[in-house]
Amino acid sequence: MPGDVFFWPGCVIFFLPVIIRCLFLFLFLFLFLFLFLFLFLFLFLFLFILLLIFPDRFR
Image 1 (cartoon, rainbow, N blue to C red):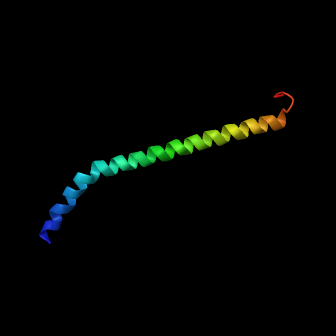
Image 2: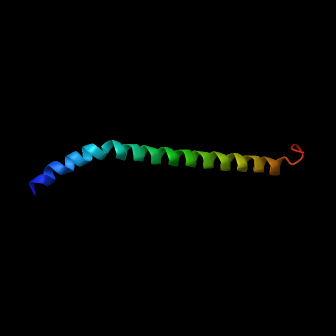
Image 3: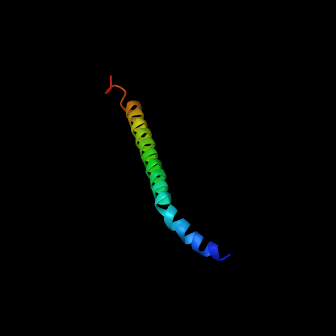
């Protein structure tokens, strides 16, 4: 159909900011959650290992 040729670029141009915004939102949420969980687990394991290695220093 001839109308589909003009519909697709208009649809892409119209929805491109929405798609980019959603992608950036999901990317930032994923990075924030991943970094938060990674840092939390790393600090927790680091403190736990320090407690196991030096039990008398933290009492």
